[in-house]
Image 1 (cartoon, rainbow, N blue to C red):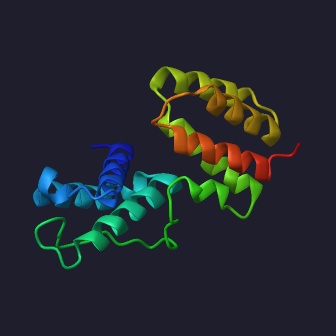
Image 2 (tube, rainbow, N blue to C red; image 1 turned 180 degrees about the vertical axis):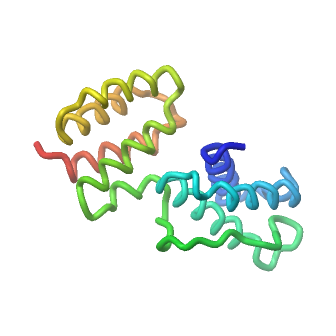
Length: 168
């Protein structure tokens, strides 16, 4: 499993767990342990957003496992040398202190959730952007054109971050 897929898998499991689904009973503790261990092995290959997402997911899964041996218990919870993870995955860029950091995080996250063809077109357009404002414009245009439910939270967070950080 690639670093990106490990991050997305743990994120999906954490969201299921938050909604009340007993993830351990679906995927089994060995699978959960294996993916968590894989996350540790590939954490150096993750970008900051993926690493924060993975840490957030592991924190959620670990918190739900406490005191419930049937569901999600695992022997070695993931640890991180990074700062505390954000309370939600998409808030990483809307809560950033600096516009450049917010732009970089939003760009990385949006690129990672786009399908291959759309990602290639978006990256090509970003390469031609001359200013951070132009990059924000491309992010907003791409997010605004996207109508999928899967990326709704990311789309909304990008719009909020653009309002906060974009030079208008």
